[in-house]
Amino acid sequence: MAKKVIKRSWAEPFKIKVVEPIKMTTREHREKEIKIAGYNTFLLKSEDVYIDLLTDSGTNAMSDRQWAGMMVGDEAYAGSRNFYHLWDNVKKYYGMPYFVPTHQGRAAEHIISKILIKDGDFVPGNMYFTTTRLHQELAGATFVDVIIDEAHNPKSEHPFKGNIDLEKLKNLIEKVGAKKIPYVSVAGPVNMAGGQPFSMENLKEVHKLCSEHKIKLWFDATRATENAYFIKEREAGYKEKSIAEILKEICSYFEGIWVSAKKDLMVNIGGILATKNKKVFEKARNMVVVYEGLHTYGGLAGRDMEAMAIGLEEMVEYDNIRARIGQVEYFGKELDKYGVPYVRPIGGHAIFLDAKRFLSHLTQDQFPAQTLAAEIYIDSGVRGMERGIVSAGRDPKTGKERYPKLELVRLTFPRRVYTQAHIDVAVESIATVYQNRKNITGLKMIYEPEYLRFFQGRFEKL
Ligand code: F0G
Image 1 (cartoon, rainbow, N blue to C red):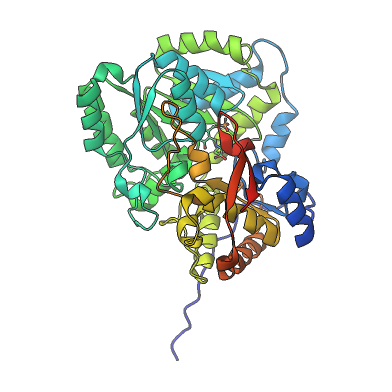
Image 2 (cartoon, protein in one colour; image 1 turned 135 degrees about the vertical axis):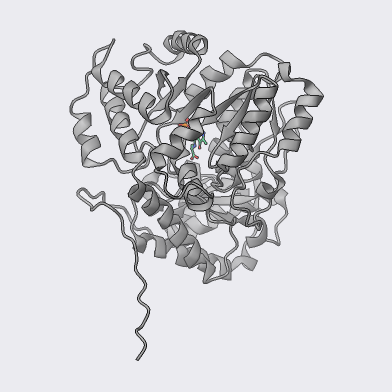
């Protein structure tokens, strides 16, 4: 008799030591709460949320080593021991000699945008991120999306949808001139594209082209270890390399990086600005005292910096990343059983439901993704976020809606927080909403703040 093929599974490389109870609520309660929140999941109280897939930002579970590190915080105003531990690890893992801590990612974006950008400049990037683009625009630049077309197509199975289109970049350089391009803004994996990575090959080509024109590359390394993982899995020649080695190679092509430590580093707060350029560093170190705090704490407590330093060591552990991305993959494969449309291939930090196909009877002006996020919350208390027309905001020059091609609901996985059973509950809820999708009506916006409107905008049922 032939032997039955036994599937061998992976499991998380950790066990649970501390638990936080979460509240289960009724549908009636959730209907009331989402209305009060103006149908914006950002405005819900977290105690009314059952499974929180809003973001992986600052919502991660720290390890016992990180918590132990919190106890050895050196809270000196100047020259904290933890700052030096963190700096050593920034050098070690990102290969950047100069470093300034900030309280979170957008603070580093603010400082670096002000330093590098002059009024009237152009900043090309592989799709925008909300806070990144806003700081570039506030510093006087026009953002130009140079990501490959496949990134805007949720059905495309391209393995590296985060890649930069060299023709688009060349055309921009020809059109505006290299002097008007202070740097190329590269992120990986690309959050708004569905957590899609770039390849090392593409990065090398972009670097070569930019070197010819003396344009520097800057890297949003917020989830860089996930990009390194995809390179290891998908790109020839990297299978035997460690995550740390791949990360170091990626960073070698950049003049500098900014990082929201609230993701890869698995801490609740923190940011990094690091560079090889001493002049840029000196400016950043001077600016940080204006906006954040002294350059040896940058708006953070000593204990936060210690947790970050240890997080840097844990983030490059292969088993950790495999389990993290494996969880997202599991979620996607379970959704497949119900035919739910989402951005392909499955990305690094989240599943992005394709709201255009999910609620195909709604027009983009009726905010399909905003609507869908609210409906999933009502069904089960699972919280996701809109990543479509609301997040894209208006063009700052014309004031017109930007109508992005992607109209998505992001369901994001905090690191080391939820179990497979939580995922099953979320999948079943989404499948239920999908079955009943024809009965769902859209929304209209009744309050629109000027900046990053998705955080505080309010809506009403049509
Ligand atoms: N860059 C990327 C790629 C991000 O995803 C974020 C934050 C930032 C920069 C800004 O960092 O929040 O520490 O100020 N992303 C969060 C998210 C908010 O939910 O994706 P921050």
